[in-house]
Amino acid sequence: SDLVQAAERGTLFLDEVGDLPLAMQVKLLRVIQEKKVRPVGDTREESIDVRIISATHRSLAEQVEAGEFRQDLFYRLNVIELKMPPLREIPEDIPLMVNEVLGRLARQGGTAPPKITDDALMSLRRYDFPGNVRELENILERALALCSENTIHVSDLYLTQSASRDKP
Image 1 (cartoon, rainbow, N blue to C red):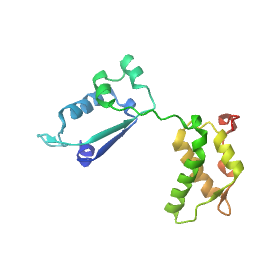
Image 2 (cartoon, helix red, strand yellow):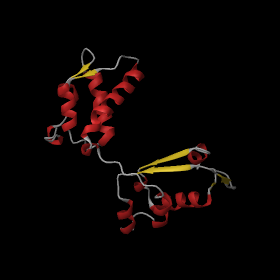
Image 3 (cartoon, helix red, strand yellow):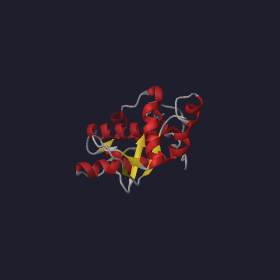
Image 4 (cartoon, rainbow, N blue to C red):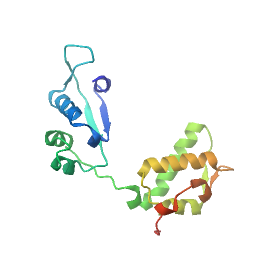
């Protein structure tokens, strides 16, 4: 309830909502329906006004059918659904994401954005990314720490061969 109160008149992001235990799903449903929370240690409820955005890698519809996710909560959360394709299905976007992530890392570190060789970029485009965008960020952060002369080479990426495919 403290997190919900902190998001008052803002947005509450629930990551991996499909992993919520059923008991917690009941509490979340109540908050959404009644638009009220009871602060920890308090006996009275307070009204809240928040927008909820939730994300999951699971199929909530399949979880509902399996009895693992409450149908009423599913319908409350599933107002607008945006399907995000896994990174491996959009290799053409990888160079844009690489530039964005490297730019952010450079700003955070107070350094000039690194260069990335064409071979390294091609290796990233061919990589399967089982960990999706988070894995891309981790790979680039590690490569930035390991590279020399502010240039990322294939050898700095440490990509596993088993997760690479033949694709342009």
